[in-house]
Length: 377
Ligand SMILES: Cc1cc2nc3c(=O)[nH]c(=O)nc-3n(C[C@H](O)[C@H](O)[C@H](O)COP(=O)(O)OP(=O)(O)OC[C@H]3O[C@@H](n4cnc5c(N)ncnc54)[C@H](O)[C@@H]3O)c2cc1C
Image 1: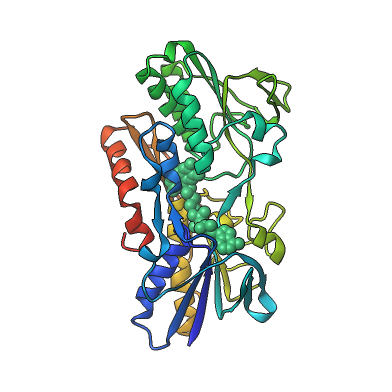
Image 2 (image 1 turned 90 degrees about the vertical axis):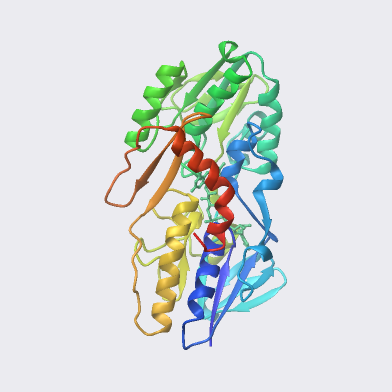
């Protein structure tokens, strides 16, 4: 019997557990699958972008994990504190779990406290509490300036800053206050987005909609009292609401286990998804140090590779599938239209023309996500 332990049951961990449980039915060797997660539910983060504009509600974004995971998967609700790789053991707050194969899927966490003044002076939609607070402020603003700014890279959902800006434009128009509220988008590098074609699309749409912007905007401090953002390049921009994409880092577990880089991102082989230096430990999703988007779709594509490779190894064939950087992201370009990008390590993304159909496909996916987590689609 082989024991597979998965730490973290967000998108990547849940899909891995469910796909593996299905695959295990066909194998000679028995596989015991254990998932360790520090909360008893799975959370649909993309919904936060809709929650701030009252287009989705808190209750729609959560499902109990025991309704998502295959009944054959053993679920432990506990915090993993260290991977003791020498002894093939995960140490948790309340015990120890031994493994033959380990999958690290602990995601990324936001750390607004790491940028001086951000916690006191900024807002964000990257956590449920942050999104609810921001929703209140957006519902009340009648005039002034809203700044959107990226306060750290890498961050989850790289296209979210562009989406929130374009949705904000439609939201303020709907409320009849757009003429009195300036939208000011900022980005740290020389163009409006790290993906060249997304930057071009954003520029075209921002110019059409009268959205102002500044590039080379590396935020070093937020002056909460004066409501001012200060950058490395010497800019000082005043705001009424500052929608920040907060800095991110990996889970404490990664720092404690010596398998990550300075940001706490697990050093992962870009094709096999094995953790550097280990043959029986894999990493996927936001937790890795791979140069791919921190996106649910990436975690999903990677889960398929990890499952194939664990099964391949159990059956004695070794690595049977490579990950090639596959990613897919919808991009909302307002309340009524969206586009999407599809890319991998060799093929950069090119957004298609925004349409209503793509927007409604995304809205449908927001409801169907739970099928993805269950490993059904
Ligand atoms: C506002 C927003 C919008 C987004 N929009 C999109 C989108 O449109 N499309 C898209 O593809 N992606 C989007 N994303 C990104 C997407 O949500 C993440 O990339 C995805 O959730 C990553 O999956 P994961 O399994 O790697 O990590 P997660 O889903 O974060 O899961 C990690 C799990 O590990 C648990 N955990 C962490 N540490 C421990 C520990 N020590 N012990 C036990 N459990 C632990 C966590 O509680 C969590 O359950 C968005 C994200 C945000 C914040």
